[in-house]
Amino acid sequence: MHDIHTALIGLDHPHAKAHLRTLQTLPEVASITLWDPDEELLRATVREQGEKISATTTDLASVLDQDRILFVVAALRNDLGPPIFIRALEAGKHLITDKPIGKTAVESEQVAAVARRQQRKLGVFYQNRALDPIRDARSVVEQGLIGDLVSVEMRMVTTQVAMRNPQHWLFDQEKSGGGILSWLGCHYIDQIMNVTQDEIVSVAAQLATRSGEGIDVEDVAALSLRFASGAVGTLHTGYMLSLSGGGYHNAAGYDTYVGVNGRLGRVTWSSSGTPTSVYVESSHPDWASAPRRTFDYTFAESPAYGGPHGETFLRAFIDACLGNGEPMATGEDAVRVAKVIDAAYESNRSGRRVEV
Image (cartoon, rainbow, N blue to C red; front, side):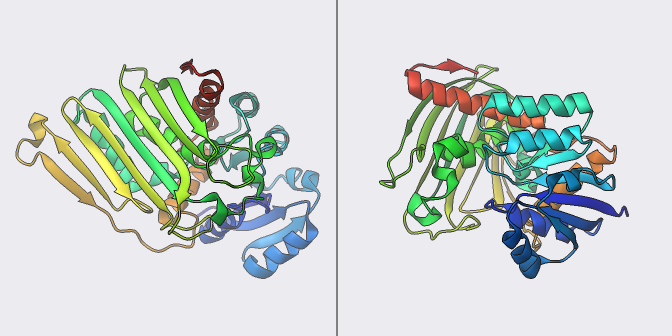
């Protein structure tokens, strides 16, 4: 068991306290240094959630100068993150950030390039990759059980903007860089490229702001996708549920569906939160005795962000920092997703299909 020393930089972010819970849950993490420019926020965090916090500071340099800190977890506003991320990497720290790293693919690639140059690990919190249902769905595709990819259908709708504080920076184009696509739709873009191991190569998009709130980012999006294999896909996402409550960690506040269709069958899952079952149909000869199967999952309790799979995801990043493998989701993965989202924004502006 390693005694890992780490730092969490940024506390004024919807996921910051959740990332702190994950660090506090992992037994290999011995101490956590907190950085934020707001002294009162630092004090309040220690009062509310002080376990393993060894120091707090408003001086970022004093954090990055500490040799014992193996890696940094970053949860920062989208427009503020990239310069700080680059500072952390150039100081020799491994870094894992909340998505999307930067407001654009160009900003994200700038950070990823520094990580490569400094030979530091760069991870991004696309932690659904660690979920057993998602990993099993990928395995079904990799085994050839649904055959060559034909099409993908994705839907992710969630609670309305009015329930999520319309004054938050997430709904400010200059600070966030985008709306539902860059904040939540990105998870599904990453998820489907991870499951299918196929690249999205072009996008046609229709985006709109329909909530009636005073925001200047899209709150609903419909994307038509083409994959490198020739398969096609769709993604429909938006802030639109009126009866599902509020909050950024409201598991009941989602309505999702993913369907991956191949020449030999399909794999699908649907849920209002973490998927607890995956349905597979296959005409592959290996499944002749039972061509339709449902895989059900139960999950242990954990205070970590995302539950046990959040622990698994961050532990894999720590292992990578120690020289054992790669993060489950890398900076390059984040850049790939950002390129798709940038193409969607350009398609909506231009009214044409855009190559990624």
